[in-house]
Length: 341
Image (tube, rainbow, N blue to C red; front, side, top):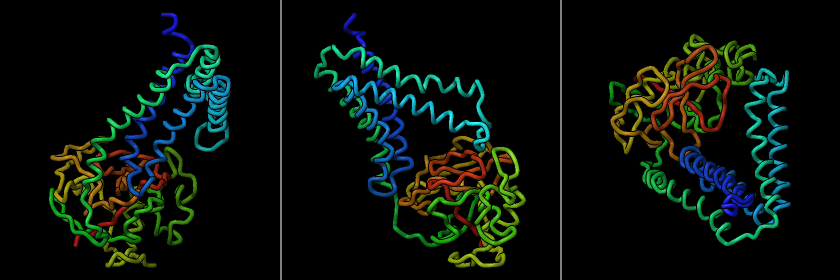
């Protein structure tokens, strides 16, 4: 029993736990966000790979492993202090509750390193290394089988032009590749909503008209989205943004995006109930044509609706509806304009 709970075994168990958690996250995100260009998915496996490497170093060279684990703990602690520093932006500064909540995260790596160091005189068996490598590998393989099959069989005819999607009480034309279909995910909701307000364009509008948009206020409003959104300036062909309003295209509502979701070229039968989460669908939709570009990094579409003063709704390719701060701009979140006729 004493050997079973030796410092080396405890350190290995804790390291395996963290590695496997990263494997679960990595495989999930790999097929959710990273499967759009070759090898992009490796990014999501990097945390698990780093943790595995640290575990092997701790087993083979306990002193070096202890130093590395301790350095990670100190680094995380420093990052937390910097991120939540007073006057450091939108975090609101240090709070006792906030700092204490990060203590386990920062002390855990140091504790694992200490255990490896204390077990430096104990023999390392082949089983230690087999467990360190084999368990995460088996877990990752088991988790990847289903998503890999689904992604490999996604429907994609390669056409990125205008699409007409009809069904589920919705009939809309969706913009072709170009300024009316953001497939790079570089535009925040504020920027899309304020495109025509003041100087035409996106520049300087990410944090609202006055640059003060935060988590709760001073952001673009629902009225701004209706009056100035980028889609209003798109020409009829959907290929160029004009200097004046064309009033042909518009930003789709949350309900319209949800009702237009597809699977294998057929409407998925999704209906939004007005709440965040997964809507009711006849089949689970996927990132497929005609609504999505399966090879684009974008997996979320902004909608015309705001959730509150500081957040706006977006729809995930699998049907999920959520809200995020209006100033958020990231590579996986874009928009696609629509017109009724």
